[in-house]
Amino acid sequence: GLEYLSSILEAIINNRVIKFIYSKFSEDESKDHTVEPYHLKEFDGRWYLLAMLSKGMTIFSLDRIDELKVTTKVFKRNKKI
Image (cartoon, rainbow, N blue to C red; front, side):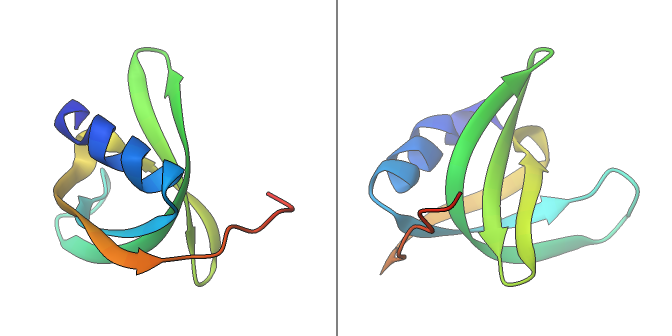
């Protein structure tokens, strides 16, 4: 997932919505996600994306993300987060 690090960082800085396919560790099926990216975090040698979904804040592991696209859609950052 490190190949997406700079694209995600650019999306965070410019408040751009991103889309990607995510494969959970515990599931065989991958799902499409459209999220508002807020933060990148490194922990124990792995990178994570903190992003807002319609249901709230969620954490995604970068090594499980595929086909990331930064959209032209701009979101308004929640100042409380």
